[in-house]
Amino acid sequence: IAGITQAPTSQILAAGRRMTLRCTQDMRHNAMYWYRQDLGLGLRLIHYSNTAGTTGKGEVPDGYSVSRANTDDFPLTLASAVPSQTSVYFCASSEQTSGSTTGELFFGEGSRLTVL
Amino acid sequence: GQNIDQPTEMTATEGAIVQINCTYQTSGFNGLFWYQQHAGEAPTFLSYNVLDGLEEKGRFSSFLSRSKGYSYLLLKELQMKDSASYLCAAMDSNYQLIWGAGTKLIIKP
Image (cartoon, rainbow over all chains, first blue to last red; front, side, top):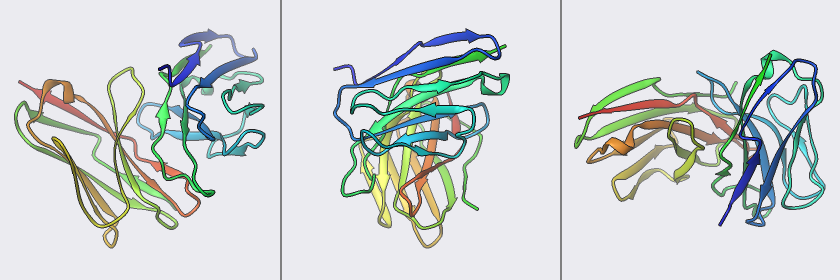
């Protein structure tokens, strides 16, 4: 059982480059999320998707975009990377019931991104 | 604004009991989560409380007081493998999670 798979696990990127972090889940969860985790701060939501075909902005969406063409895939794109986007990025999914999300989150193993 | 407070770091001894506190302020409330995160790994779910009281799950228990905006995670019979960060997260009225910065728990032999 794979759960959630993220790629790449680690990447060093020059500022100004475009980068896509991939996320795939095999649990058929409706809701998916992208978080960034920085030292001393809580997980911060970048973008989310409650169901295939819809996306929403989280707490820190600027500089990032997402798409949700199908249930399983939820890629995160940095159009032009900047050093402040150096972070660990976690993709997560959850079941969603009746328009609300009260289920636990399942996380991928994370993607460590360094922007120089 | 919305806020979660939990201690940055705690130290405990193997075999002992430790309580990690969390206070929250959110716009509405739809439950309180605790996650465990070992260094370099993904967070994993530990518990969910939405009603007042204590939920016990093996060596781990979680408590919630909605009137006080307070929760704690209680770990008994500590083992070295319990060394990790423990993340508190409250769900607001929009069903969005507000995360604390995490409590790093260090277990000493």
